[in-house]
Each structure stands twice: as structure tokens, then as C-alpha cells.
Length: 285
Image 1 (spheres, rainbow, N blue to C red):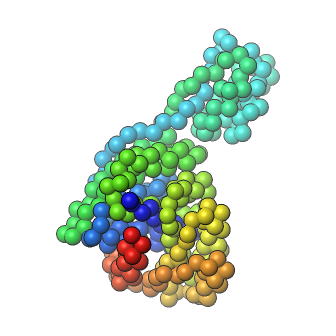
Image 2 (cartoon, helix red, strand yellow):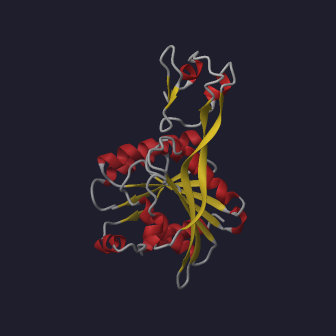
């Protein structure tokens, strides 16, 4: 049975994708690994790993289609639309703003004249790929949001659904989430066994670590902390939050020019702490 591990964090720029890709490669030396890049707004794991992505499928979302022969201009569809995607002026037909619509179908259900049917719009694309190294071999999935799409959770859900049939093939499934605590992060975290929270010893790192740990607590997902750039800033800030949430700091990765140079060249980092994290996970199996 595969173990699902989230690589997450409240703050962007802490090294989440760098650690996710490096950890995936380290684990892939001895295990079957699937890496899922669930940062659908800005996926970059394939760039770090130099993976050539192959298009798997397009993701569509339902949107309303109005039949103005049946429409009585009552405005009920506009009243129930929480996203303000339907503009209604009394005496006129409703106007749909497709970019605002999230496909909830409330307008279709509420229309008393059956004047609204389902249409669809493309909201994203799923990609797959493989990484082949000297000792590593891993599978890869990612998705990319169409420009202008507001609600990204359906894209993350579709991406995870794509992996569902293949889950038993892998020892570990690593899910690299978006930074933050918004809807698509919650979708990515859903169903994972453990979350690694990547943070840095700064006031912003402390603030956003608190937010992600609060979210994980509500979702009842066990959390561990990985402190990146550990020797830059004030470590006490993170220790305080770790103690409050009883979350263990399992690794501290120091700031390093070698890591910076590897990242700028699109290369996974090599650090003894990544090996330490990988061994920690392997002991859980």
C-alpha cells in the first residue's frame, strides 16, 4: 500500500518544490515513486527535474447555457449565483461572465422554466512524464490551469483522480502543493497520510507556518516541519510554533550557494538532510 506524503507550506519561496523534487529522487533510488505537482497555478517540478511532459487529458467544467426561448427574465439564476457570474438587469436576459463561473450548477437547479442547460469550458490540462537517472526512476504527474480560471480545486481534484488507478503501483506518492491555505491546497492535502511543512526562520515564515499547521490540525493530518535556510534568520521563531503545535522539526537544511546554483541550473539539490528525510519516510513503511 502506497503512503501519500504532502510537501506543503503556508509561504511561497521557502524551497518547497526544491525539497519535493530532491526527496522524490532520493526515495526513487530504493522505491517506486510518483511525484504529483499539485501547484496547478504555477507548476515547476518538471523544470527542476528536466522532465519532458506529455499531455494526458484536458479538464472541463460545467457552465450554464441559456435558452432564451424558454427564459422569462425572472432573474432567479442571478440571485442564487454566489460568484456573481450572472449579470441580470430587470426586463433583460441574463448575461453570463464565464471567467467568474465555478460550475456549481445552482442556476440550473433554481431556474423555474428549465431555461438553463449544461455547457462546458476548458479549465486545465493534465500532463505526465518520467525521470530516468543512474539510480533513480520516478513517475510524474502535473496539471496546469487555463488563464483566467478563478477556482482551481476542480483541477487539483482531477489531477489526483488521474493517479487513483495507479496508486497501488507505488511505495510513495509525493504531492507538492501550492503555497498557502486556500481551496486548492485543501484539495491537494485531502487523503494524505503525512504532511511536511517547509518553512524558514523569518517572521513571515513563522506566521505562515502557524496557518498551515492550523489547517492540518483541522484536517487531522499529522505534520512534521522541515526548516529550510535554517542558519539565516531567527530559529527561535519556528521553535516557538513547533512547540505550540507539537510538531517535530525533522530536518534543518542550511543556506548554501551550492543549492542555489543547482536550483538556478534546474538541478535537484543534494544534501545529507534530504537523505535523512527519506530514511525517516522509509521507516514508516
